[in-house]
Image 1 (tube, rainbow, N blue to C red):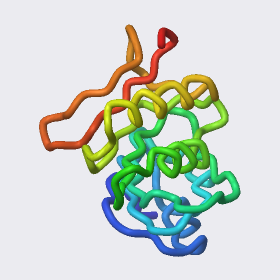
Image 2: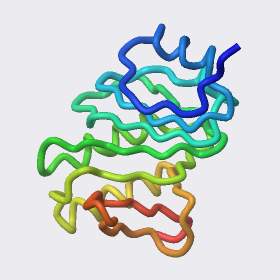
Image 3: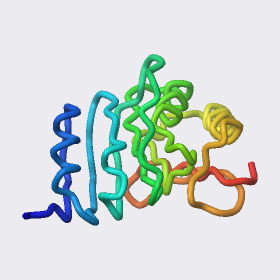
Length: 153
């Protein structure tokens, strides 16, 4: 049987997730989607999982990502001043361990105060990234805002 070792693409349906899970084995997965999808069937199928999603404008049911190894979450922020929506999105996708390898935002439009509130709320909710030290954010090499949420706020 043919196995997928690397996948980069968009998945729109639960059937698409199931199909990928059926053929993935120790895979590197980069998944983009616009609507929340349950990716739990991918548990044990990947060595690297990054998920790109749009910010959730309204409250949605939790769709936790698999937690081992910790996934990377990339949130595509479309409007300035939407730190609450970013927080809802990060919380909706949080693995059961509440630990991500990394969380990145596509826009740098959050004010310093909004960023402080976002980090504080996610920290309070138990969300963490694989970073160490004090919680903070910085801009990575490609212009994404990387949230580093550590035990120290």
